[in-house]
Structure formats: C-alpha cells, structure tokens
View 1 (cartoon, rainbow, N blue to C red):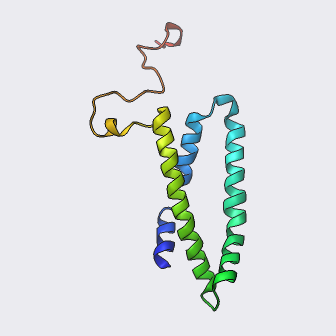
View 2: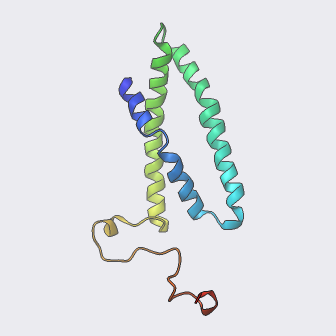
View 3: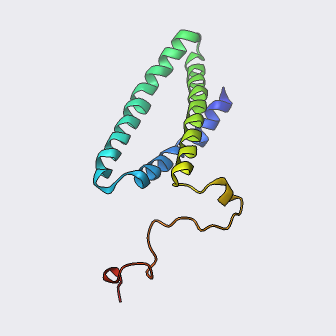
Length: 131
C-alpha cells in the first residue's frame, strides 16, 4: 500500500499542467475562458469533492481496524492511477493522430520539421513585420 501512496505523491501534480496546456492548445481563443472554467469545475468537484467520499466508502466497506483509512486510500489511489494511465494513453494517441504531438517516427529520428504554431518573421505578412 505504501508503494501506491508513494507513486501517487510522486506524480500528484504532474498531470494538471499537461492537461491544461493541451486544453489551451486545442481550444479556440473565444472559448478559452469557458472551457478552462468547466475544466477546473470538473477537476475540483470530482477530484477534491468526491475523492474523500470515495475513500471513506471504500475504507468502511472493505477494511476494518485502525489501518482501514490508510488501506482505503491506498486502494483508491492504485485504482485511479491505472485509470489515469489508460486515459493518458488514449489522449496521447488522439493528440498524435490530430497532429498536436509528433508521431513516433519523428521521435525516432525521421527528418521532418515539427509544425510551428507561429510563423517566423520572414513568413509573416508585411503588415505584421516590425522594424
């Protein structure tokens, strides 16, 4: 059980910046505020609001004794980490498919330039050039 807790603490905050940056990359600018608000609402309602309740239900239903809460927390952590890995794997596959991330061929050394999100100064229109 301590391994599951240690692994959770190691990666506890690592997923939120990745999710937020991917969300910012695929969301149209006029909808950015609304989409970010929905993302954070779901994150806090489910993660922070429902999490303690689920741990309490698991620890009361399946364990007894003074260590029941710790075992319940470890069980929920282990289960949710496997679910999170599956979701991350699916999202990475989709991000590669739609072109938000380089494919494995590019990562293995194929000589293609990665797509740029902003044009270089020589590619910009004359009205956008400064100087």
